[in-house]
Image (cartoon, rainbow, N blue to C red; front, side):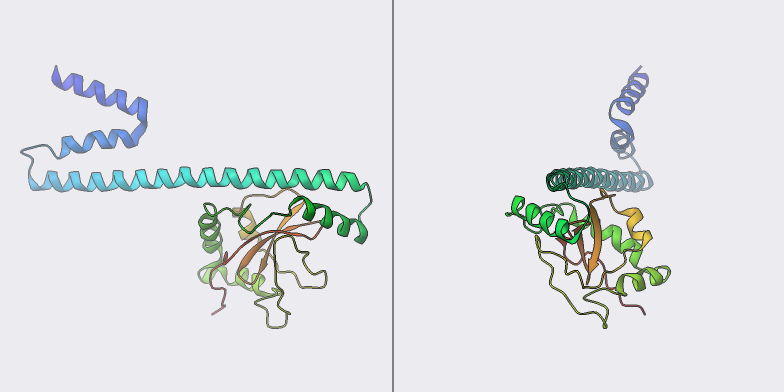
Length: 224
């Protein structure tokens, strides 16, 4: 009867709180009083696995929440871009680009680095980018980031990037490799990712306005 009740409780736990909770319930059984060294060792291993799994699940949830905030901020910016562009009612031209940049800058006068690349999402971006730019298989991708990069390419003139400043029209533009673009959160058409040095920059595709900056987003890009 007791064994039946135990099995019933474990089954309910699996149904209600998932496999991680079921593992937690299993640990005391494996490590019960009177168990031998082998059983206790196995119990310790299970406990470590549970702890690691719970930590990973917690981290994943934090990252999902950070991404949601990032996407919300990006969507808010896209809405501002669309409204200001509609007010101008002009075709694509240098005058439109300059007017749009001034309008957005005025609306985001208090914008600071990290408003969109919030601190909680920055480690995720750095990890995702590093996964694509480290190791011997990523040499071509690293070369693409360095070539024409105003901060890494020796033939390029370095530039200073600041939030709410216009990306210099005559400055070179680095390439963000497809492998990196595929793993980063997608952006609306009005925004582009761009590397300046190792920093990742969000640039308005029409206004050429620097929207936000993620410092040291890329790992060491030396091609060895």
